[in-house]
Length: 442
Image (cartoon, rainbow, N blue to C red; front, side, top):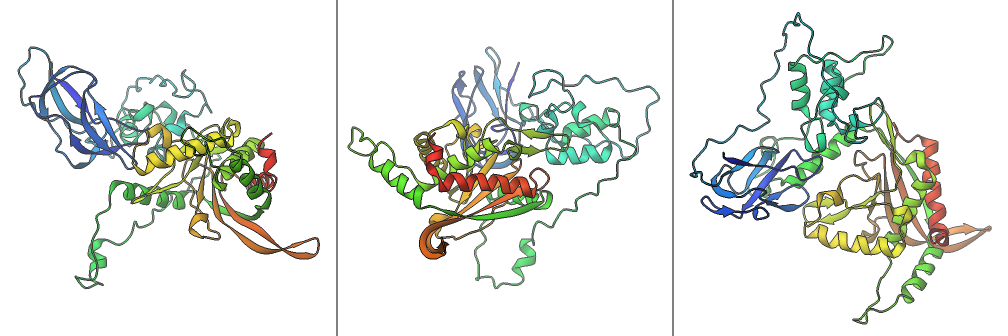
């Protein structure tokens, strides 16, 4: 029986990928563990290994093909004793016929559907267990508009994620509408913003030799889509404070000066200001747990750890590796992890689990001389901290003007999850840790 190789889901949110390169050709024999292809996502290029033994019968997708949907058949293997044939490519899973617009209600009741196993709690879904958060935003919106209970829909995406085709299949299968409270007011639909002018619209305003058209790569498309979605759907508000850095800089200098030397004679570590910023934000979320949350339509998810994503600039965009459990890690551990993450991020060698998830994020433009700015929240986070440059400023201390090293930070928050007073409490805790850095060591 022919063995199908499918486009894998390399991250929980991946729906499409680019088949960058084949490592095999038709007629080659492969064994479990052999690398057969390289798949490029918006963040990384990863190798796909064979899980079965056989002979490559047909490569259905050419090298360089972009936007190949997850679970599409990309190659076929002939098993032992089978002649390699040329089977017709399987249809892409996204090609699902839409449900009739005005289908009559069946006279017989629809077969009751068993609630799927919950990816979070390991049992059948219970109200408020958080499984609904594993549905894509578009799938939730369509389910809400059609009156479908999203918790009763079985997900076919990565890690059981509910995607649009699952909701459409549930509607076509006669899934009963979700109960609606009598007093509930209708939620107005969010009108999408235009994604931007088309190339044809722009070209008429420029001479033909005035520009070079550089096609968008996958990373740029994903950044544009996610940040547009964030600004459309997340009600941002901003809180800014100035933090004195003098004590932190003094302590950092002493710690780095006392770092032990390695076999090569170089210091074993060198802490940066950003390492202190990461630690301070992780401790602040531990101290203000109501701000360490994610908003979902059904429940607030309060996280038990401070998993801090840190934006790293790479050619063509950025990636946000996540330092997990920051509140319980030492500054030297955080520093070592960030150096490793940054090096592998620029080489696009991070694994999906290293840059997905997280409970908050940091964007630091201080090294570029930016005094202050406001960052866009990266859903499902409810907060992001924008860090400006530390610089000497004139400040008033005990009625006298003195020179101090000051850094401005701006906290962007999702107002659905973090209100003004709660956000002020979080950024106040951060300021205390930065200005009293010894408290991070105890």
